[in-house]
Image (tube, rainbow, N blue to C red; front, side, top):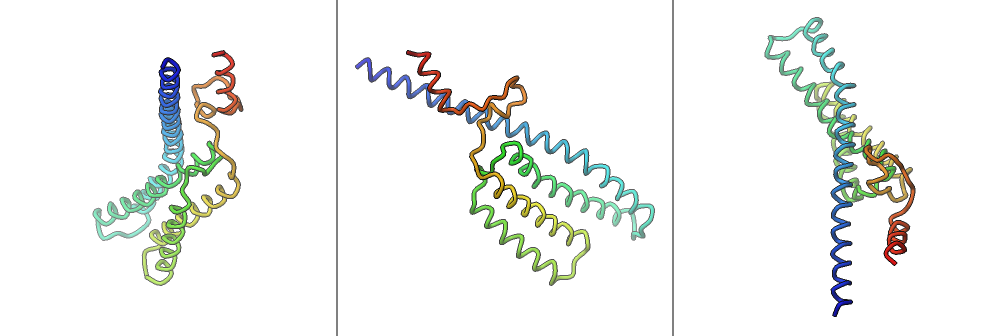
Length: 183
């Protein structure tokens, strides 16, 4: 009876540990997303503002509303790009694409192909056409990352910026050490 209680307590501890590991991993992923978004904002913000000023000074518009609408569309296209690229940064930091489902990538490929087809067939503004091909660039980078990062990603503690050491010990080896200490 005491063995059953001990086994149940060990199972509860392992469940709690896995929940903590998932929460830690999500926190690290969120931190990486924030870092990537900050870099993109600082790198894409000035060109967006610069193009808005250039457009105001050198291009003809029917009025302020027309200029504001064009500038807003440019911001939407840039934010759309910014929303896609943190995943690339996350893949790079994890050195893995294990967390990306293959079905989603196939769906993305079909969606990108259909968008490209319509971009060639339908008359549309140049900026919109460029935004369609921007999706292609990001998709090909996804495919490249899927090709080069075939191995499992490291655990969240290896990527934690607050961590002072980076070890390459696997979780199985850590569990073995913990078992030795317990005995």
